[in-house]
Image 1: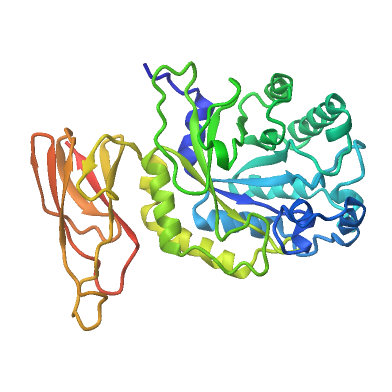
Image 2: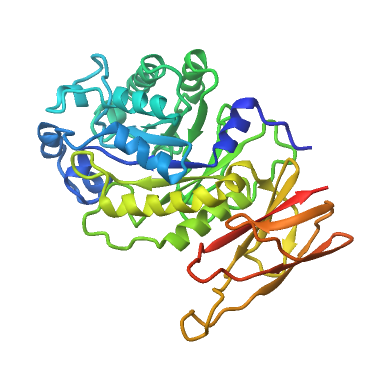
Length: 411
């Protein structure tokens, strides 16, 4: 038996698409968020990056609007990454934070205010691994209390938040992280917050401590969740980079194409997972122009097909073309069709234009009509028992959306 999701988890699934933001002191070096560890830097030198952290290019409202214009419903921002530097006021826990840097501001306050203004749900990433705090290695119990107090600040100073996204427990797999105490603090102050603890690349989709609300997938494509017999319904979320780094890599030119990003979003929703798509702001917090444009393209696609992404839930239909699939919502089905060609003269369209027929099995619903969401064109179909044959017209010349979605209205 599959458990019924709690409201906060169902609400999280309905968000569908979020933006991840990795930004910290490491951004000034432009070599990724792990540069301290991988390049074997000395902390005495590394921590001096705080002295040049001005955040002069950080415009919280512009960042939030980047997400909103992309069709994202939530943002997960790194309030503190593994380097130990906090973008929020740590209220005396230490001075390794933005208010005690030349920035002189609580950047998380600005972020939350901008999210609330524009109807975006704020989520907080918080590391559990800490390279800066010596107690992480020398007095782990003391460190865990520091971690708990840091999280309590985030839970009590910024109003209602969407959730907390933890990362780092994999660094000490045999340690007692006292997760129940940490999560109890969250539940006391933010009872409706989603709790995520990243399992990392080596344990994608692994189920963790019982209070956790969502499993995580990192890079690649998520696999379907088998919730049969679970004591609690868990959501799923895939986090994904625009290129090969989370924090900005100024010499990382290996950006994914808009087509790959769109197909990844669709593949996530096919199995009911959210996509958390990452940007890495520049040294002092600006949104990189190329990343901005990639997010803008996602927004153009979402403006056409977003209804299917937000509302659609996995459906049991199967198609001979393994890429194609169906999502379901109240009163309708959404057919996601890949690899259509463009109609028009063969001399000016790639590989010539043509229409295609697709057969979907396991479609028992009675269907009144099917039409493309982008232009409203009605499509021909035949429905015999549970088999649906769909005649999918090619893209009109001047259009190619990578994945095209047809909406079926049910009787």
